[in-house]
Length: 334
Image (cartoon, rainbow, N blue to C red):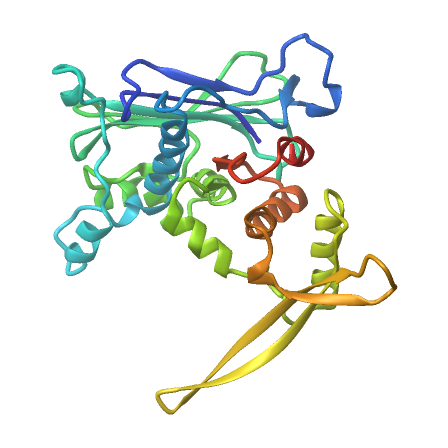
């Protein structure tokens, strides 16, 4: 569970910004608060503001941090895969409207509780990038009973000796041999199957950022069905119940296989209709799913991500959640 996300010198943000999910003493929405790791945390938060105020860049910062943690093990080096590594590498985007900031480091940091452990242990992980180099990286942990005392798992800073505690010596040597200037220790360590470092990488993998402000992502999500939807009546029923929580117009779905011949090859696709109850009788009328309102299609596209985080935990960022949705519907989702 995410406790806090901090970043600095990224896109439109020059100074440090903190998204803090620690609950205040306000008791108006107690059902939105969970007690964990000797603290009260918010299960949901909203970011709002004027156009061009930087809201989307907060999502982008978390998305960039996640990508770098998950993928940087393949960055850099002189191996045969250098071309692939270069194509995957994404350079950090500092604040450009300041001659000093554009050449300074950008930092990213999270505090989180690993729900899978059920121990209440808090982890603090972050790194700093400058140009194409990791100039600092840190990983600390704090036991539930340790109050404010954090234990160093590792600390890395350019030009200084690597400080490591609690990792096997053989793993440390492997990291030192394989580490490139563009690569995070956590990303490389997870690839090397070092459990403590894999824990961080897996936490990021369990989170998701959905950007409904991106036309390409909007189109992609509108074409993707919930896993197992075409073959499982149970999953179809779950989607119906999901829609019924805000609109009982859709009573069921009808799924038909469609066989198409494309360049002498067989292609299997599906025709999906939404069933609506007639107003004057007990019969149903079917409407192609793609003909439903843009709001309904958005809710359909959002379902897999909502279902995953509600069933299995994780952090879900949604940009432009309110676009094409009634305010009461947005409130219902929250």
